Image (cartoon, rainbow, N blue to C red; front, side, top):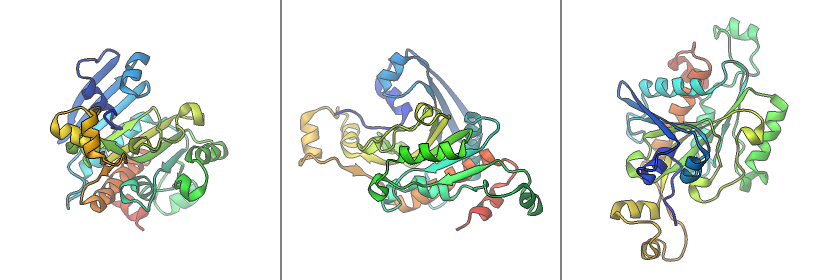
Length: 294
């Protein structure tokens, strides 16, 4: 059994000094730490179990607290998202996950906080004071057990119909460390394999499968129990005795914070607003909140 994490930065930490083929840069914007890690070789990608490309990690204040997200975090995430997107063209935003399972509901809830504009005419936008709007479509396709269709199948069909310049996916992630749970945003230009963090990997969604750039955004909402036990006891998750004690019946367990409802609510707002600001930078955050209020 290996360390289970969706975060590229944690994969690199697990490797330790094996950093050949990996370029890393850190910046601070106020209280926000941003780490940009680029995997440039196939050998490094194979070691990390990640695709060749750019992985951006943003450390935020704890999203499970009462105060939740802040404007500084939204703006920092928006700038990084904008840097990954084509300068022009429509964008399809996909909220991955299951709304019936709170730790997995980040994607659909974030998608609901994104302003869809494809149906808004230029005349209507001008008349309502919205100004020129980038074309945005939003979709939460559900999961296989709800629809009988693979998420990748749905996305490919929609991409063929809409021909967007890029796709943005949002999904809940798994972390290997408690101190990154609910306070870390990862985004990458390599796409995503839905469900990989909880051992239920589905068909990959990336440029190769969709035909357009795919930017994936996520926040860890769960920790694998065996990985957590290994971290807390400074042992390897590959130890059979540890695995037997943590999973006595051979069933994988996932740990999530007590304040998961608040965490997902705040995380969804942060990601949704950041995407909105990246796509419509002339609309202030407060106006974006009003336009997407349920």
